[in-house]
Image (cartoon, rainbow, N blue to C red; front, side, top):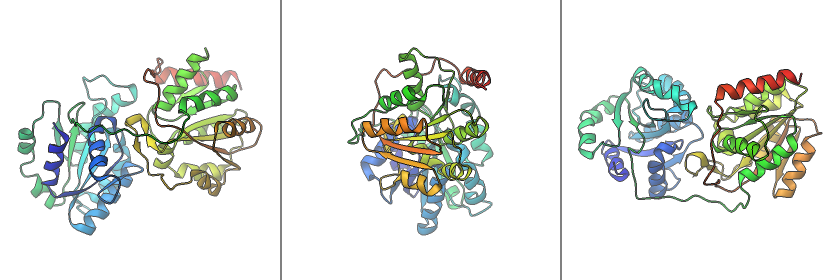
Length: 376
């Protein structure tokens, strides 16, 4: 279905505000919203899905109109609390139109982190008391209009609906290109990190970062037993690294994070600062983008993450401005006491032939646990 037609049908339901977290399955929707509205009070990219629903609630209270919240189904976990305790018709009755990208849909090949959520997505939506409307590659405007019969009345009663969007269900002639002024690719920065980390443990964040860690190890003809690739659970890699650092105090732990992931669960930085792990190095590669799902901007235009790290209590905080400063910061981190925070800007983009890990998440975990046991 053409995205413009889909948006027009949403607006016929009195939808006037869009917010959410970008998803590759919804790239045509995200590109259309950015091309049409930009980032403003009509369309906002949220830091996490629960944040998006809270924003949407404020919009409804202020205007009486219906908000639209878009998300990947992996983000349902972030949205359950406000949906059940804030917007549900048994609480405040705030009508919301959800557009959910269906990663891991049964029968459609996908990455391992999406498989189980894909299996249970429809059940979760039903349990959350949402009317589910499927959008597939064969959906037409006529079938959509038929599915929407009675929906406007339901929304007026404070109930919500969810469009469950299959792969390639939405299409658009609008193709957005996202870039910044930084010359250094993230993969080059990861090469520098792995060159100095030696036998330290690596925890890498969701998406292309973990794929590039795997690829750089392959390029260096090294094993993967020192790395934990956080293929799912966006925003939690620094907390995983903190758990490792606290319980393996003799090991250096290097957390390779992204700005979108940091924003999603920023409270983790406060806990790192409070616990003061001397062996933790937290590196944020900041490209200002949700690159793994299309390159849409994150909400950090005016944010100085390094200052937040300092306020949270990190012992050493460095904001590197070029490759030489970054390399010096990495070298210093090998002998300074942490927690250490290093931020480095990077370009948006990756190699066209970037691969994916060839080992399973379970194999990754077991190899890392064996490495830790052998080096105690």
